[in-house]
Length: 215
Image (cartoon, rainbow, N blue to C red; front, side):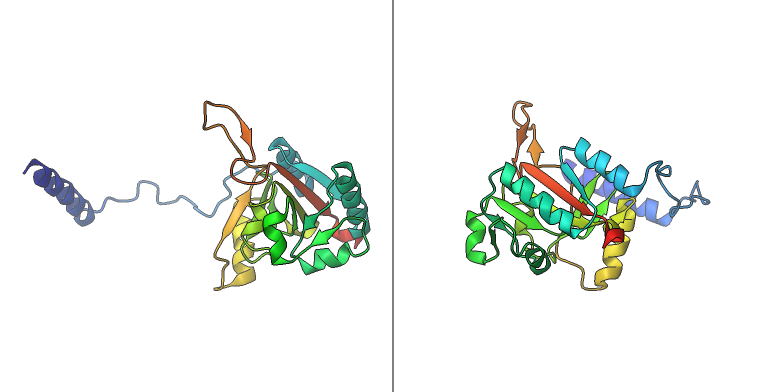
């Protein structure tokens, strides 16, 4: 009986609140106004600073040829002998490179390193926006131990608000079933406050940013 009485009290309060609507105490608030102060640095510099602060590895490339050279060098230094990439354009860029590339679905469960594109780069938090419509879908952003992302300078946006506005314009009513932000390698300290890398996804995250102006 007491539970029913408590429930009725709560419902009564809700009904009264709906009937007696209070006036908005802040009627002149501009909810579309910017939340943050303008960034002092360029978008690429701000992104690089925040991305590396979150534990990511940032490599700037003046053009696609430099990307290929830098990727081969990184792969050689880390003994990457097998990289999975489902993106046809990236595979074309790396044709003839010394890095062995795979793209067949049968290789996904065996791969340790993935190479993907992304939707946008959000400068202020240093985050990478990815979606299920990127080549490789949902799997390549979380499954491998090492995730390598390739992006261009025209994919840089200041804040999350602009990123979602761009992706909404890009896909219209057919938005991807998954849109997420990746900020640094996967990590957790839930267990005894001990930091563990790669707990829920890649333990290493690399971002190659290619200067589109040089293309």
